[in-house]
Length: 393
Image: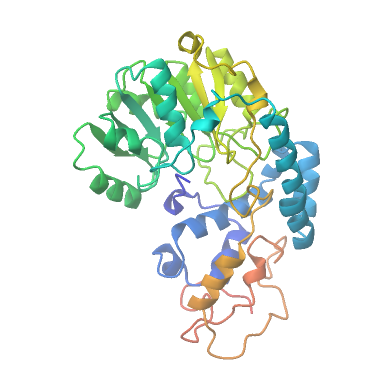
């Protein structure tokens, strides 16, 4: 998912930030990515910020309770695998009863897209026409897996691709250098700068396709775009963690970096309300519960027989570790395995007998506190040595 840029994470200047620096190792090491990818570090810092700043209070009431209880791994596993599985099959059963042979979900196929978006988009434009064949997509990472690549590479489209990470942008520019009509730009997208970016890249007032996937402020950026532009087709990632009837939007935060949890974006109900306000109809959600497809109402005519279903298009999450992102961030077992391969203690591994820090208000029960026992590096150096950061052990 796009815009996970460690360099853009604000310095929270908090005791917990000092703690995570000490636990994960030398500051210089992971800032340069020699031990951890910037994505992993930015997620850890954002997870601490959600806890310290109380951002989880923006969740609906029952989800706030789940957030607190999910600090227990057994409870979290039951919710993320058993309860979520039951919910997935229930919603799938309800939705399949409403599908017709002309439903867009039946046309899913994947060439370069993350799921079945390639086939759905080709069918949409087959029904309403290609128009000027101009697309805009942001949050593309390195551009190898995105919704517009098939159209740009094989169907003669032109367009603009935007990404926040300079490293990803460099790879994307190399990938699309043979396509004269494709502009790849680097920008960390916010609601404040999106219109100026569109003007800078000469985006027409009515682009044929707009794809929004920035894992955070999607709703607010899309709202800003629709105040001045009228795309023919919209594709926006929705937060499928929230059931169809829940109207939830992540409060706007221009410095937000997705931490791997359910704290991002907006529910399908919120995006549907925004789309209807600006004259769009929801025509499909793809089968993994990631992206929602909207078509401008003046173009739908009789092309989409189930465009009246609205929220009945909702698809529960079926991705990540099984059934969507967890309510609160925690590292996966695969991450721990990679971590242990890189950090092999020379001597015996011991758990700390006292807290990692003596500063008041800091607990090792943070999202990364369970890695504190890895107190020696491969070369025998302890975390924090030579950096001015005390490891507190």
